[in-house]
Image 1: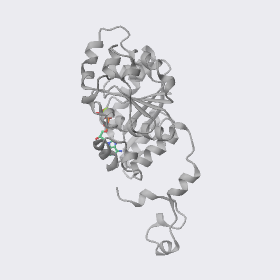
Image 2: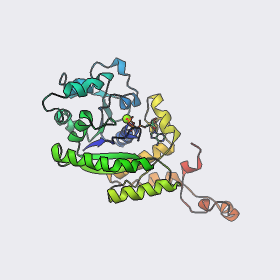
Image 3: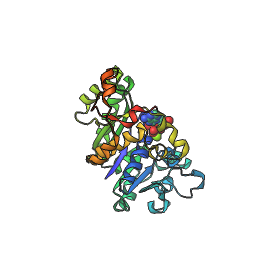
Length: 291
Ligand SMILES: Nc1ncnc2c1ncn2[C@@H]1O[C@H](COP(=O)(O)OP(=O)(O)OP(=O)(O)O)[C@@H](O)[C@H]1O
Ligand SMILES: [Mg+2]
């Protein structure tokens, strides 16, 4: 299965989702390829790959200089390979603009290696240029990360338009895997309002899993690690695990759930100070932790 992770808006968690969902899927026994086609190369550095040491990258693949298998690098993280991006990619749109098959170059290359992987995640740049079109043309499904803020609603019609164009001209079978709310705070009215509006636009397509704002998620890339390898018990790592199960349509095993349950004793219940901590209430281990 090939997922593009895309949204023309910048800074909505596309890269964070590719890195952290990919890492969890890899640790869950899947063979994962993360494809970086954003000239910022954040997925590449997010996995700790040093761009200056790379001889081949997604740029070389897209312009037809090398085969994709020559540019893919293995990471130290279980199950994860990466097609890295370097700064060269910034010029790629112009170079490709008059080229043949300019929107299906990534697709053609992925066809040659897709059997080596169970899941391919493509990190798209925040614009609807040729690079994103290559991502959307190659994908079976699109994951759309989004912030639960008013401006996200303004982007919705643009997003549906983009999907129409892509389906009509490049990839008729492209499906929406789901809208993923990132940096989500369920306590805010605006979060719930935006979720309701988005659900109206894309009925049944909003992922149940919401990714909370979590400082560990934002710290992890500077250590060149996905959050689950930086702080396994963090809320961020748990949220991406939950998303992984949702995407695979798998139930989390009971044994895993039990580890996370804390049953608070009679004393707390009697004190009546915190309803959530009443006996038998399921509280994830991490919700009692500070970020
Ligand atoms: N759940 C989260 N909690 C806290 N910080 C987050 C979370 N998700 C993402 N971030 C931070 O928000 C910033 C933007 O995230 P990210 O780079 O994943 O977005 P993007 O959509 O890929 O951006 P771009 O459009 O520039 O490629 C990053 O600094 C990232 O560390
Ligand atoms: Mg990004």
